[in-house]
Length: 106
Image (cartoon, rainbow, N blue to C red; front, side, top):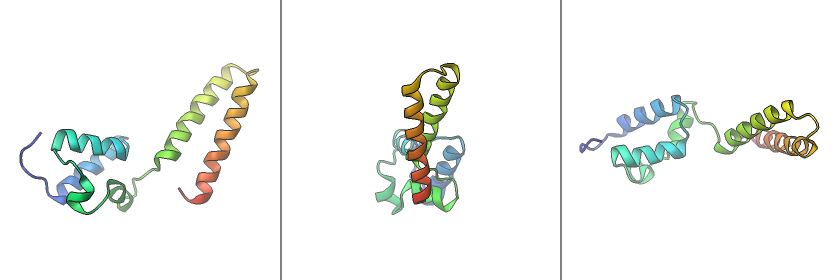
């Protein structure tokens, strides 16, 4: 909520702090736009938010993260409902998708 323009290093520090709190790069972009008036991080600093996170070894692929969360929910449901066969099939499919992403290097 500042009127002062952020430098690249200050913006990167903010991004790293938000990522350590578990916020995804997409949401970090929205927060930068809302709170710091950085409309397009890539145009202003010639870098993407995901590049900053990769340089600091914090980046997690959104696809991989979403699949992992979905698998956790399915496992929790399946542990309570052992006879739910459609859920078992969906769980197997989602785990296969996650393995494929890991194999491709995401």
